[in-house]
Image (cartoon, rainbow, N blue to C red):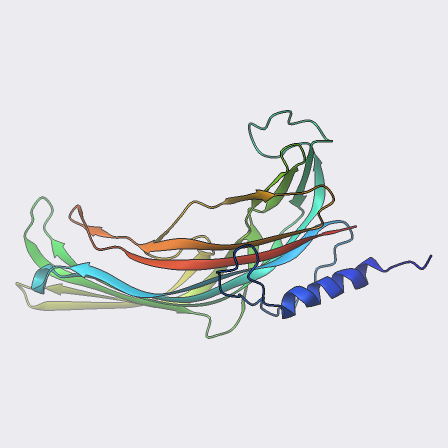
Length: 276
C-alpha cells in the first residue's frame, strides 16, 4: 500500500479553507472569507485550523443639547485571524465540574503548546463629547472632547493567541471549544480638548499611545458572553466548523441615565480539522 504524506493532506485541507467561502451551520448567514496569511502550521497530530473575526461598526449615541450634550461616535473596521493548533492531548475532561472527569474513553481533550501568533488589521476612530461638572453638583462648568484613532494602515499586525482548547464528550455527543482570542498592540493618536465655559478657556492635549487590543472586546462596545462554544459531535468526526454572529452594543449612560443603545455584529468563522 502506498503511504500518504500527512503534510500533503494538511496542505490540501489548508488550501481548501483559504479559498472557499462557507456559510456553515446557518445558511442564512453571509459567506465569510478566510484571510491569506504568511504562515502554515506544521502539525503532525492533534486539531488544527484557521479562524477569522470580522467587526464593522459605525454608529453614534447621545443626548442633551448645548452645554448638556453627550455624544459617542464609534467607527471600527477590524479583522483578526490566526491558526488554532491543539497538539497536546489531555487525558480526561478539561472543563470544571464535569461528570466522570477522569474517564479517558468518554473524553477527548486537547490544548495548545507554546505561544501562537495572530494577525490583525485594525482601524478605529472614537469621538466622545461629555459635559464637565463640579464634584457634588449638577452644574455644568465645561466640556471634554476626546478624539482618538488607532490604525494598522491596512497592514497585518502580528500578535498572539490565548484562551483556546477543545473537549469532546463521546457520551453526550457534544464538543466544547474555547474560542481563540487574538491579542495585539497598536500605536494611536489621542487628542483631548477641555473647555471651561466661565473662563472661556480651551486646553488642548495631544499624545501618542500604545494600546493592547483583543478580538473579544472593543472601546465603548459591550460584547455578549461567548467564550465557550458547544455543538454536536459524532464518533469518528474529523472536522468541526463554527460560524457565529455575536451581537455588540454601543451601550453608554450619563448621570445615571442610559443613552439610546446602538446594535452591531461581530462575525466569527472557524474550520478545525483532526490530523494524525
